[in-house]
Length: 152
Image 1: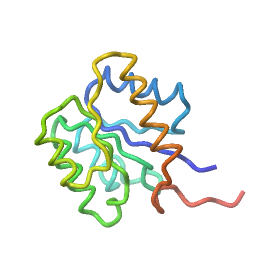
Image 2 (image 1 turned 120 degrees about the vertical axis):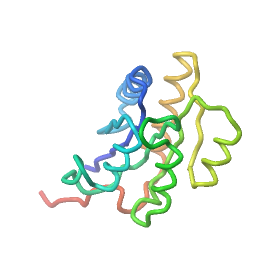
Image 3 (image 1 turned 30 degrees about the vertical axis):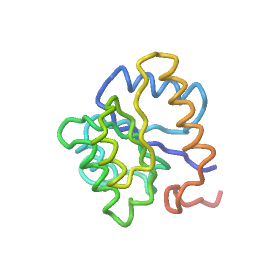
Image 4 (image 1 turned 90 degrees about the vertical axis):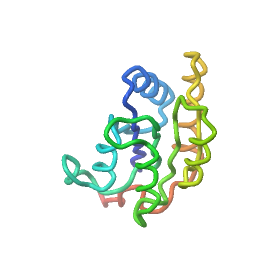
């Protein structure tokens, strides 16, 4: 069975809870790894620091907030898309920013999607459900995003 792991990079505890609830209710990911700042996200992806011994394989998608402590989301996005081993991972910007410059900069750095977090609770949950459905079920992930299958 393939492990569909999603990396959620979000510092807002309420948003984390809503996202995890929406993904879990719809059974859209086997595992959601939550990191709360850009530095931790990079440590996870580059397998360094606390994550140096983490399981092989990249997440099938990264849900990335832009306004993060330590290292902002645009810098995280830039580093992901600049690295040959990571650039194929779909990165979905999930932010409250409607600013045109953030939108342009995100796509310019290689973002795969840009989603503005709805304010309404039900719209927020529906948006996460649809995102999860597309990236975890419908979309075919790039090679290397899933761990190798092991013989039983």
